[in-house]
Image (tube, rainbow, N blue to C red; front, side):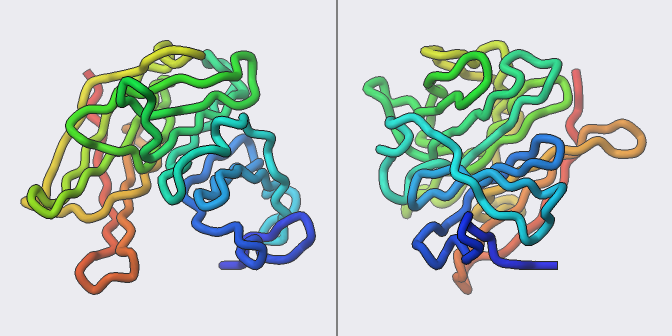
Length: 224
């Protein structure tokens, strides 16, 4: 089933100019969705209300509301109980750089609200993130240039590195260019298979362009 995303007034969010949803996170039936064009996060009680759930805006820090147009929130992760930062939303910008050239990110709610940065390298920007079963953050990145083409990358960032004022970084799991079956990869999710394997699912955005494709890719994460 498909239905418009609704606001508190029961009308589609897009009708008020709140559009360009980029990421989603779940907390036991509560869904959080980022809206890049207005730098906002809305919360839905999906378990009780289903497709007629109405979005309630989440209070966000002023620095988040000042993100660049069309370069705002691209990734969102909710940290569940039993992990450091439990109850916190981790929101990451696509291309908001601090003075050192690193990517701005925010901790919203939970015990340690504030901001931090994710190390930026090789001109990659962040397009999504997901929480691994062990608690680390999997970050999906993309870069494009007319001379170098398109490339994607995934990094694994330890949750212990994420705290207010920190600069977080982690090892690269894989990197691929157009020599492989990739496109404009913008979404990632994680689940456990029946046999216990960690499965990563990636999806691309074709931007309504005949030159791009919608791809769904799956990988099994090889644990050390």
